[in-house]
Amino acid sequence: MGRRITRPAQGSKAARAPRPLMIAHDARWPGEARSAVRCSLALLTLLLVIDTGAGTLTGLRAGLWLGLAVLLLVVVWPTRVSAGRGCLAARGVLRTREVHTDRLVSVRWSDGVAQRLVLRDADGNRAEIDPRVFVANPPLWRLVDADARTSMARGTLCCGETALRQVSARVDRETARTVFKVSGLD
Image 1 (tube, rainbow, N blue to C red):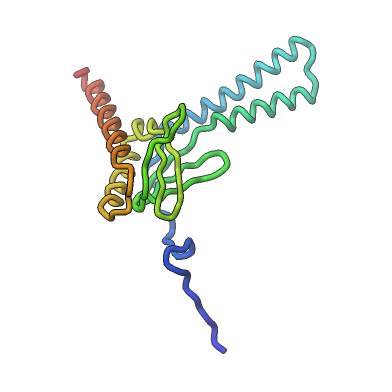
Image 2: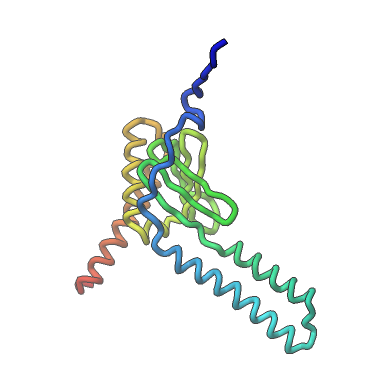
């Protein structure tokens, strides 16, 4: 009896090529992460100082305040966005969401208070990105935009051309404003 070798079916996760090298990152992320840590530490310090001043600080209460500060840190921790050819990754506190930007099916604005751009690919992956990340990082947007155009050319992108145009116009507007400001033409 010989050894039987089976190949994974087309489109299965095992058959995919390795993840592409991420070549563009959110440049503002380190500063936002430091701000999140500072907010959390400021809350912890404030709560400990108030509790100590009132004379009610115990080990249990200090643990409670520490837990509250950690909860705040988890809530305000920024999503780290990076992109490579054909892939966009959004790393949060608990999980990473990857979308194949060269196989997008839809791009839309999410409903709610905070603006989010929701990207979906043909594999069913989904990522929500704050459009300000793209506005602040034009190289990141250029990679996503080029791959979205590939999706449009292939015919996989069913809806979302308007959302892509809106983000592209916003990125171009802010880039031009920055260029004028730096060159003194503002």
